[in-house]
Amino acid sequence: MGVFIARRLVGVVPVILGVSIVIFLLIQLAPGDAATVLLGPQASEAAKIELRHTLGLDQPLPLQYTAWLARTLSGNFGTSIATQLPVATLVLPRFMNTLILTFGSLLLAVVIGYTVGLFAALRAHSLFDRLSMSVALLAGSAPPFWLGLILVLFFAIQLRWLPVSGMQDMAGNGGALDVLRHLVLPAVTTALGPAAIMARIVRSSVIEAMGRPHVRVARAKGLARATLIRRHVILNALPPVVTITGLQLGYLLGGALLTEVVFAWPGLGALLYDSITARDLPVIQATTLLIALAFVLANIAVDMINAVLDPRLREA
Image 1: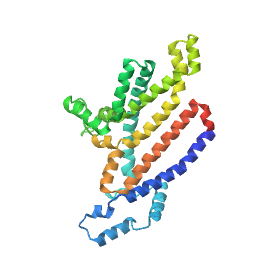
Image 2 (image 1 turned 90 degrees about the horizontal axis):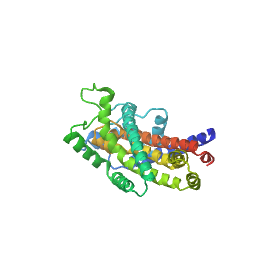
Image 3 (image 1 turned 30 degrees about the vertical axis):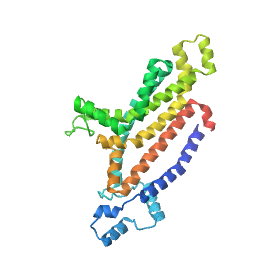
Image 4 (image 1 turned 180 degrees about the horizontal axis):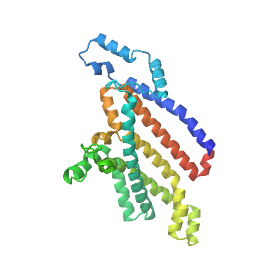
């Protein structure tokens, strides 16, 4: 197991390096000019040239990338062009807020997806199965921002049960319960899509596991249905389900941008949106790299869990 973990960790290095190169090049190729955004379109060309020189934007791309990578590896993400504040002080608190939204959404998606998928598989081709899978298809196809607006219209505006935006009330004295109330709508919005995908994968995986020869033999011997499902079906169905759960965690980390913008949740998505609008390159680079790193680590965690569930994978 130790060798398996070491191999996976070593494999992260070229992946992160490649991701950092792609992120840097894509941002550089994006239209617009940071100097023009900061100084305004009426600024003189001499002022723009001087600002580009101050920011190091007039250097060749390989030198810019090397300098950025060296600073990043040392823990220095640079200074925000728009606010002149250290990027780390902007990104890290927002990252914690995104983690709250991500893991809240993941918990909700796992509970809904696993429960609906398991019951649909155990009642395959029944009315519940057809209805739940149809709803899952619709929920998985609906855009998150549209779902968010529908939930806001119904639960926040019509019923006035839940707050519409932010992470805390203006007074900020509600504590954890106040954060939880503000978390409900964005977490449900973000979780519905992954929950629908998980439900469909769980259903197909459980049905496939129930058709395996050793499960049919155990059923023919009269093993109780609950024991059969617990001992032979669920454990055999878990590896693909765990894999898709890990992929959805990566989606939740990187795909909460629209949800955070709709609900004014102070996370990485909202920060990234504002930074793209202002063409704040250091913040964009740090944010996207952090999301990519979290996605890679989530996939490593999935590989380790699958290796525990199926020891044959450790030899792969």
